Image (cartoon, rainbow, N blue to C red; front, side):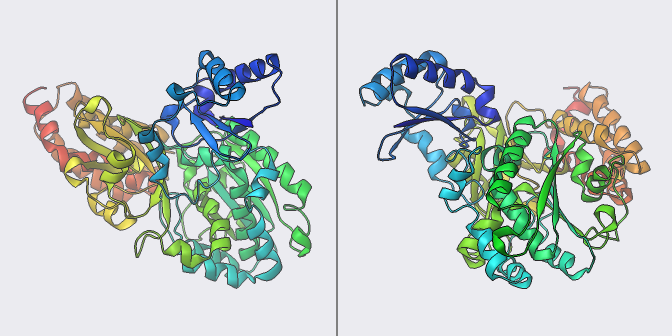
Amino acid sequence: MKVIIGQGSCGVATGAKKTAAEFERLIEEKNLNIKVDITGCVGTCYLEPIVDVYDDNEVMTRYVKVKPECVLEIVEKHLVNGEIATDLEISDEDKLFIEKQQRVVLRNCGLINPEKIEEYVAVGGYEATKKVVTSMTQEDVIEEIKVSGLRGRGGAGFPTWFKWNAALQNKADQKYIVCNADEGDPGAFMDRSVLEGDPHSLIEGMIIGGYAMGATEGVIYVRAEYPLAIHRLEIAMAQAREKGFLGKNIFGSGFDFDLRIKAGAGAFVCGEETALIASLEGERGMPRLKPPFPAQKGYWQKPTNINNVETYANVAWIIVNGGAAFGAMGTDKSKGTKVFALAGKIKKGGLVEVPMGLPLKEVIFGIGGGIKKDKAFKAVQMGGPSGGCIPSALIETPVDYENINKTGAIVGSGGMIVMDETTCMVDMARYFLDFTRKESCGKCNYCRVGTKRMLEILERITKGEGKDGDIELLEELAVKIKDGSMCGLGQTAPNPVLTTIKYFRNEYEDHIYNKK
Ligand code: SF4
C-alpha cells in the first residue's frame, strides 16, 4: 500500500504539505509499513489537497479536500482496516472531470512522482528519445511531426514541423532550441502544471526537437515566479544526465545535447520570441524586427527554434504513438488535444485537456460543472489579455483555432476565465488593457501611448464619466494600435475592448448614457 499526495502549486497552496506531514506522523506512530510519496497536479485543482491511496494491487482510491484534521480518519479506516473512508472519497460526479478528458500532454500529471526519473521511465519515458536518436533521421522526425499536425500551443498556432524544418535548413556551426516557459497570461497555469508534474516530458520533447534541427544546446526560459517548477526541472535534468539521457552521446548514438534553465523576471512581453531571445542574451526584453526570424538568426545570431512547454510535451507521445494517432484527434486543421486552464466563476476550476473542436459548452458545463452558485453564464475570456471574450450566445462554438478566431478571441495558450451575470464587461476590458499597458515595452508609440489613452477612456466610462463618442474613439484607437504596433502584444492588446464592444455594447452605453 502507498499514499500519494498531490503537490503541485495548487496542492501546496491548499496545505498539502501539512496533510503529508500528518500522514507521515500517524503512519510512524502506528508503525505501519506504508510509503508516503508526492505527485504533481491531478487537474482537479478545486478538490485539493488530493490524496490517492493505492492498495497492493495498484487499485487507487482518491480522497479529496483532505485537510490535516481528516487524515486520522483515512489512516484508521483505510490504512489500518482496509475500508474506504467514504465521506472523504471523490464523488462519482467529480470523477467525470478527469474521465471526460483525453490526456496526451497531461498523461503523467498526477500519476508519477516528478522528482523520480524511474517513475517516468516506468511509464515508457525516454523510449521516444531512444527511438529518435538511434533509428530515425532528422527528416524522419520532422515528417512524423508534420503528419501529426501539431501546431504551437503558445498562442500563434504555427505548424511545429515548419519551424523545426526551417531551423534544420539553416546551416550553422551552432543552433539552439529554446522553451518558452514564461507563461504570463492572468489565469493560465497549464505549463506550470506540466513543469511541476511531468518535467521529463518537456526535456524529452526538447532533446527530440534538438536532434531534428541539429541543435546541441537548449535553454528553458522559465518565469522566476515558478520556483517549484524550476526546482523540479533542475532535479529532472540532473537525473536525466545521470542516466545518460541528456549530455554526451545520448543512448550511444553520438548525439550530444544538453539543457540549462534561465529564470526570467516575469515580463509578459518576453513571451514574444524575439524579446525572449533578447532577455536570454542579457538585454532588456524588447521585441526585435522580423525578419530575420529566429530560425535564421536567433539566439546569438544562430538558428534558433522556440516552442512553449505544452508543444514540446506532446512530442514524445507523437513519436511513440505515431503522428497519425495524434492527427486522428481534433479537427481537420486543429489536430490533437489542447490543455485549458479553467478559472474565474466556474464551479470546477482546474486543468482540462480535450480534443480540439469540442464545443465550449462541453468544456465549461460538461467538465467544468457550470457557473458558481448556479448564476447565469455571461462570457468567457479566452487567450488571456491578447484574446477576447466570447458571449453566452456563442457557447456552442467548437474550441479550435479557426472557430475561436472567428469570434474575435483566440485559443491563445489556453487560459479560460469564466464570467457570470454579475461581471461588468467594461470593467473586465479595463482590467486586461491595464495589464497590457503596464507590460508594453514602450518601443512603439501606438502601443505605449495608445493603450494609455484607451485605458483613460475606459476608466472614465467605468466611473460614470463617459462621454458621447467614447465608444467610437476606443474603436478608432484600437485599429490604430493594432496596425501601428510591432509585436503581438500591441497588435492584440485592444482585443478585449473590441470584443466587449462587439458583444456587450449595451453595457458601454449604459455606463455612458444612463450613468450605471
Ligand atoms: Fe513593445 Fe508594444 Fe511595440 Fe510590442 S507592440 S514592441 S510590446 S511597444
